[in-house]
Amino acid sequence: MRFTNRLAAAAAAAFCMAASAQVVTLAGAKFDPDATVGGQKLLLNGAGIRYKAVFKVYAIGLYAPRKLHSNAEVLDAKVAKRLQLVALRDVGGEEFGKLFARAIEENATRDEFAKSINAVVRMGQIFADQKQFTKGDVVEIDYVPGTGLALIAKGKQQELFKEPQFSSIMYKIWFGPHPPDTALQQALLGEHNYTNQ
Image (cartoon, rainbow, N blue to C red; front, side, top):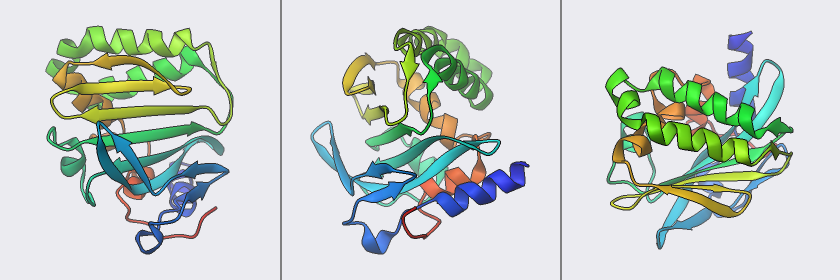
């Protein structure tokens, strides 16, 4: 099943560097070719769909100031970036927060997680306070070097996390040693080149 999911995620990855000036559409979720984070213009690096079993959970796109090819480049604390998630099904806010917290714990070292536990708890509460994410709702995770990580839900900034370690482990959900799906990780790194779906 996991192999099938990886193939499905890869098949759904709709990013084409040659057509980077165009909006990318995945299962109805649209990703603009660029975004501005902390006053800096970022370009869509790659995009894909997160599957759980056969269900589409969310579409996600990575924005960066230059083409990033590896996890290490994405996790570089000197690089501004955005992850844009678009819900593809209804999901409870508390459930969403727990999924993120569990993924952080699986990818962070014990020391990283211990130092960031307060931020992880705050993040979980932010998602829980949203009550419900419905299809089409957007979550943005913006990182600006020297400033911190902003969590934006449904168009409103919820909090700015200034803990440097938390910024790193938040992105490790997708770019750490145990990503939700390796094909999705590859799609975010722009390794798949498919037409829009």
